[in-house]
Image 1: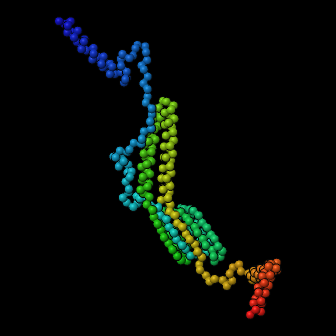
Image 2: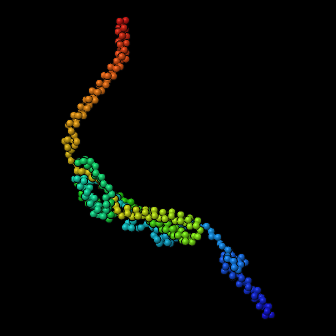
Image 3: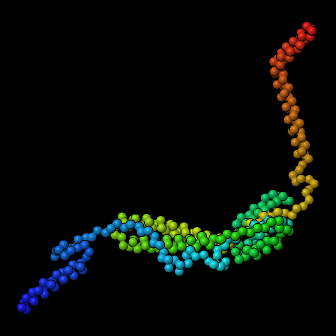
Length: 295
C-alpha cells in the first residue's frame, strides 16, 4: 500500500516540476528545443521605430505651468515701442546727446541718419533702452527739444507665444531623451544610423525654439524708441543758398543760343526743301491767277 501511494505522488509532482521549469526559461523557447552542450537559439530583435513624442501628463502639465497665462501684469511679457518728433536748436548736437542718453541708461544706438544742410538739415535716430527706463528716456528726450510735435507709444503682449515655446521646448527635450535611451539599446548599425538622423533633426528644432525664446526675452527687456529731429523754423534767407548771378546769366545765354540754333536749323531745312515747296506754291499761284482772268 505504501509503495502505491509513493508512486502516485511521484506521478503528480513530476509534471508540476517540469511545468515550473519550462515557465522559468526564455520566452518562446521550450525545454525540448535545447540540448545539452548546445547554445539557446538567437531571438531576432524587432526593428527600432522612432516613437512619437509622448504627451505630457495632465497633472505634470498643470504643475509645470505650461500653457497657463500669468494672471498679473507684472508677470506678463510686454514689448514697448515709442516714436517721438522733436524740434531742436541743432540737429547734430541733439543726435549726439540722444546717443549719450541711450548709453547712460544702459542701452545702445540702433541706427541714425542726418541729411540736408543748415536750415534744411533733418535727422533720425533709433535707440534701445531697458524697459524699466522707458518712461525716463521719454522724459529726457522731451527736455532736449524746443517743442515736441508728435509722440506715440505702442505695446505688444508676447506672453502667450513665450509660454507656448517653453512647452514645445520641454516636449522636444523629452523626445530627445527617449531617442538617446533608444540609442544606448540599439545594436544594429542601421538602427543606430536612423536614430542619429532623427536626433540631429530633433536637436535642430530645440536650437530653433531656444533661439526664438532668447529673442523674445531680449525684445521684452529692451524697448525701441525712434526719434525724428528737425531744426527750429527760421525766416527764409533773402538769397537761396547756392544762388549765383553768374550762373543765371550763363543759363540765359545758353537758352538764347539754343533758340538761335533752332532757327538756323529750320532755315537750313527750308532752303534744302525749297524746290519742293517752291514748286507747290508756284502751281497754286498760277491756278489762282488763271481763275481770276477767266472771271
